[in-house]
Image 1 (tube, rainbow, N blue to C red):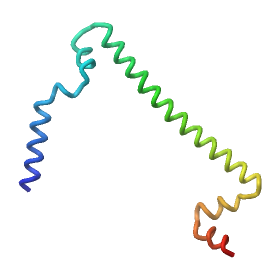
Image 2 (image 1 turned 180 degrees about the horizontal axis):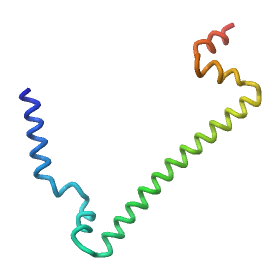
Image 3 (image 1 turned 135 degrees about the vertical axis):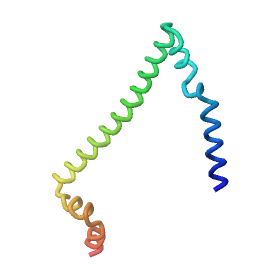
Length: 99
């Protein structure tokens, strides 16, 4: 119990004393002035975040599309039984392979 109180007290002290450290220096500066540079910096942050989101989304869509194409190719080749057995009952697929 004493340990939990020490951790809680330490957290409160850190949070109270670091109220100005929550934002990066440029963001803090942007809120204090009406200059153009900090606003441009904030817009550049949005572009960077947008690029990362776009890359992750693109890779996800690509992986989904490739798996869909692969499933269609296997189904057209007559391997539909792999999807029927392995997805819902993987132990049956292993048992049939041994026979």
